[in-house]
Image (cartoon, rainbow over all chains, first blue to last red; front, side, top):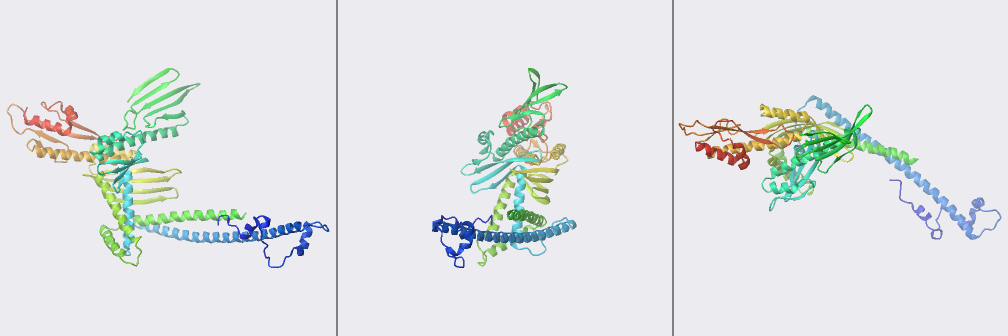
Length: 300
Length: 279
């Protein structure tokens, strides 16, 4: 009932050009000249008016009457709509309250016993199977947390490699493998800067587990570096001058920050290089102070 | 003017529908989490479900789906457990908090990876953001069967401190694989050279002894101890396998370089040959 977009037939007719309108029966004879009383307001008294003017005036009056009708219909529709909405609100409130009571009862029952219990009434096969399906789905979801999960497909397997930094899970990546006649990668969502082809060449045919393991190492390290860079930008944005610069593999990070000392501020530039692509710890850090004052270099 | 009143009611309807959805989910979650059916019950249900299907009074499209769906899911689960080596033996899940955008669960998982048993407990927070869903693990607690091992306990504390659940499983998987490799390696050499190889701690032990059984007047009995060590402490998700030799005077000093050149198996073979020759 969004705004009542449909037009009543009367409305439709109003939009037609005058010569296309059909005279409507208003439940009583309304010949042109018996509307003389109303005509007085609009037409000059005593003056002779052409039939055309009279008819135009009549059409206008008819239009007004129709408009009033439409308004009445509209108001009725609005009232009906409002009633429907009110009824719906009552219905839903009732449903909500019932559910709330059920949930509260569950919670109360929960305080009594912690253990798991089989449904005392004889459960239908349907209910048992539905329960088991959810149960197995939950178990499959847990594998997502372990880093490598997957499901069988018609012609192979689709693996999902998840990444995380400490307790926070980050992006996951997919590898759709076909297993016949040989193992090969059908589709994947691995970013281009990860050396997928190299790794596949080295391990895919001989040891899939190893392949996934090494790939997971690369992806997790990349995700961790990127996450750390994002966190640095987010939490130290007031101290960092401008934005953090990094390459797509996030193994090169450059940023500037200022250190103030009484009246003078010293601009520092930091360059972090992560030489080991499977590590989220930098291998070389260069800190320099411009202009020209080179402070030092440290190696890990 | 009327429209604004309608809008108020429409907003109310939307909010009620959301509440109902949330409450329904809460109710169903609780039902799911507090119910348990044994394997026999499930097997019986599968069988009786089959019978129900053949009754022409019921619709055909809906009924077979449940059984097939379950079988397909069980096959997926069985595959992934076999592939990763991680077998979960029990899983308790409880919804602790649920609002429109935020859900918190408590999980308790037990299982084993090859011969290593573990139990983990943690809280999982899922938050629905505008673009994505964020998942965070907290309150992680880990128990391992070989917890006595000093390396393992250091590893476990590091994992717990940072809530590094994913890292735990990845390392577990690697460790268990190398554990298996070591066991197979020991078995292989024991079978091949029964006279020269002794396993004082058995197949799961930490070291292997290579000895020359032929007493030779001139030379002392040579003993070589090879202890594979797994360094699980590094944050870097690569394990470092270090083979250490307990030094004996005539032990080949170039064992480590031999290891790198020829690989583990060949290195040990060579070592055994050297020992057997009674050099």
